[in-house]
Image (cartoon, rainbow, N blue to C red; front, side, top):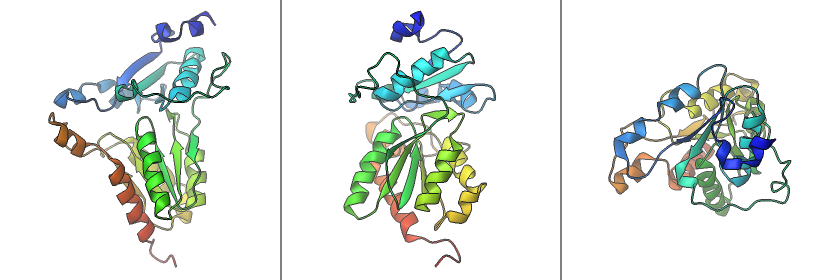
Length: 239
């Protein structure tokens, strides 16, 4: 309990690790340096969380401190200056979020957007644009990357019948690929009305120039375009 009261001062305690991760502005090829992510998100035995907003950060950090196992806490540096509302429940000293449980940020019926960390905000913005087009998008915030809340992904896809997986990382061997595999290898596959879509960072080294940097990372318009593709396509044999 004493550790939890110290908040930020207990970032590295009880073998737990807090690591700024994902894309950073104006660092170019240094984007390759966080090798921890490559191992942490795939290594058996580690728990890995990636918060999006203030409630995620508080609830997951307290859960990570309390957990007897090593937990890697991956923060997106570009969210440090972003303000988020904090509910009365989250302001309680007893507020804790369970590890391995995703959260539906926005309910929808036409397509599921599965993502984590900073891309949750992008997906919420995309969902607003899609709503204006008459498309109801559900946004699922994973919160935890290991363990992955497979049931939440499967149940959402069964409801919406379409999937778009979104992440900032490179496409090969990424989290988005794992999300797609979860659906393809489960009974949720039978519920798909169209092929799954991925929106990821470009498969190129990170550029330094701001326009090229922006082109290397997913943008709201990329998510909207992916949803448009999947809502216009159909699986073979689906009426």
